[in-house]
Amino acid sequence: MSRIYFHSLHGEAEVLGAERAYLGKATHDASIGLLLGVISPWQLRRALARKSMARDAVGPNGVNERMLSLALGTFGDDEPAFVVDGKPVDHWQLLLNTLIQHGGDGMRLAARIHAQCEIHCYAEGSDRAWLATLIARQREEGLLRSDMGWESVIELLTSRDDEPVVLSYSVCDPFPNSVASTWEPSEADDDHEAWSGLPAEERWSMGVEWLRTTGAARGLRLDPDEWADYRFGHRLTAADLAPQPRAEEEQ
Image (tube, rainbow, N blue to C red; front, side, top):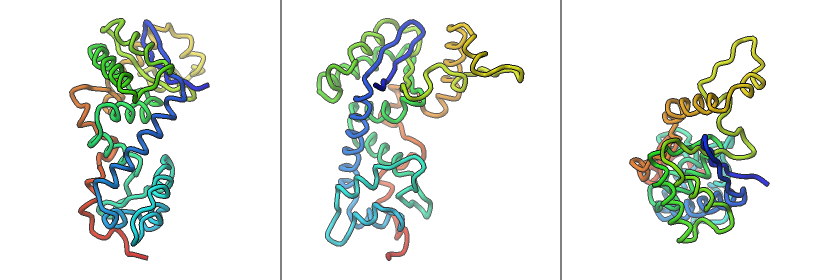
């Protein structure tokens, strides 16, 4: 069974992979509701790319919300569904940004963990208590479910404040790894063997150095000072779709 891991140099905790799937569905459903609350069906249709399957969900009689949700539930290499200022816009990032803008702390937490656990979002040591409090509050309010492992995460986060805690997902590379680090192998090295042969503390140090430079620049830090203002990728939200001129000719 898959896991979300919370790594630190001196301890580790894990959350069941079923919780990651649950957070993905919860964030998607909430973001679709917010999308339809922020803009009208007419504005939505204008902003949808003509070839997008999502366009078929929006007609003169309103929006087929289930069809829209299914069509916008794809991401990665799929064609962007929206067009803003004549340019295609990644719809997954836009939905997540809308959720962060209009949702509360719980949905912001769910969005960040779901979207970034695979690529090693992290909390600095000074922010571990803040993150632990945020998780505990969402457990109390019921967004994060019981018997999933969150209590072990809270225990890890509150155990010390002098080193970061970093996330990873069990079906992807753990942290630290040879890519998410400042390590540079020599031409003669077998990358996997050379990396694995390094002392654990050295690997951790190079991983943290990478996080604080490249990772932070990519928006991987869970930072309380930027929590509500954080945006993924292009930073656009549903509000940016509202004033759109006709994105493409009606067909």
